[in-house]
Structures are given as C-alpha cells and as structure tokens.
Length: 150
Image (cartoon, rainbow, N blue to C red; front, side, top):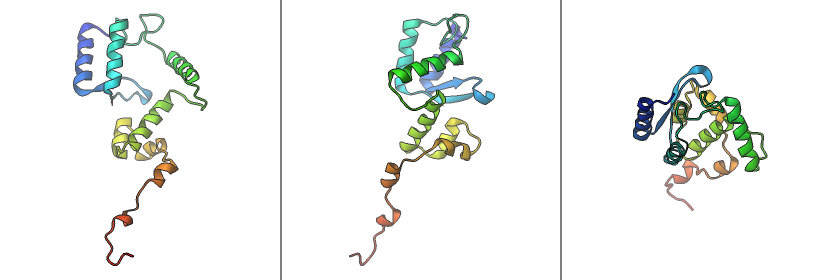
C-alpha cells in the first residue's frame, strides 16, 4: 500500500540506491532488483500523471492491486502490437534481462545474485550464447608474443 510515509520511503530508496523491493514473488523470497534511470523517469511521469493512492498499479477495483492475469493480458497485447511472432510470456523478460546483462559483460556470478538463484546451474539455463558472439571471441593464443613468427 502507498501512504505518504511509505511513498516517501519508496522514493528515497529508489532514488538513492536505484533499487526496487519486490515482495512475495515466486518462491516467496523477497528481493531487490536494480532500477534503471530510464525506468525511474517513466515511473516519475506515471506517478505525476495517475497519482495512485493505495497501490502503485491498482486494478480495476482501485482498492486492489493489479492481478497477474491482467499483467499477462497487457503483455500479450503489447506483443501483438509489436508484431512479436515468437511464443513469449512475461517471464521471458527476465530471461532477456539476464541474457542482455551477460552480453554486456556482466559476470555470471553477479547475474546469479541479481536473479537470486541458489545454484549457478539455474542461472545457466537463462543464458544462451549466440554463435555470432562465439565467432567474435579472440583466442588467448593470438595474444602471445611468439619469437620467430613468420
């Protein structure tokens, strides 16, 4: 719920630490996740525009929060509008997030921590490396200074 004290606390935590507290997700393990500067700007605009009272994202009944099913419907609609042909679910965003972190050079151990996986094997399921990425890797042998190179 959003009352004035909690809203201030959220604003302070979000803007100082750039973290969002996720309460009661799958597995009921509360966690923090990073918040990008761009997402923060969008959230600020949303808060100014809609001024939610009790929940950040209220459902049709303003006294209740948005349901998982509603989020799934919104996501499916956005996928249709974007002409995404592949079968995707909201969870696909988590997979894409992890993949983009890896491709931008984030260490797998950090990704494991961000995703809150106990086992690195679980994190590795999310990670698929494209053959174009593999083709761009330089062999460590190519960096050797060998005497008598021809």
